Image 1 (tube, rainbow, N blue to C red):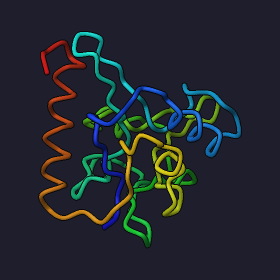
Image 2: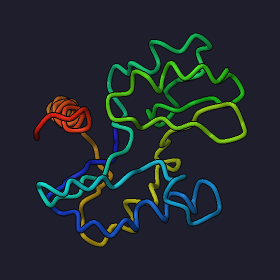
Image 3: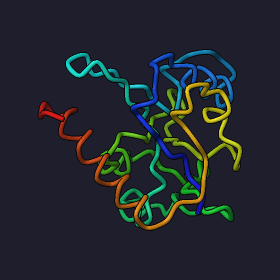
Length: 158
């Protein structure tokens, strides 16, 4: 399966990924509406781009009472907005906070890999984001990175 691979050590913190994502998905340059987030950790002086990890065994899919979260033909985990009931159970279990509420619509959304051509990857001049085939090791590494980031976001240390 192809997914966005993040190399935080290459990220310059330009946040272009947020801008192009919000423009692609909502038609406005608004980082608050982006489905990728460049999180700055001032103590470490590092920025880490975060987006859906396209988990092999997604917790969001398991908890959705409306079965609104599924894999599309390309293997991406996507939300069917027609079935979403806005319960936010998926938001609660996502290890990296990649699922967002759509204001005023009562449903949630997440990265869908732009149909196989992620705009954030195309705009990343630093090479911190790439779209590539992954193997099991990459999935394990992504989950491990997500857990470390989760600790930091909950007040722990990286």
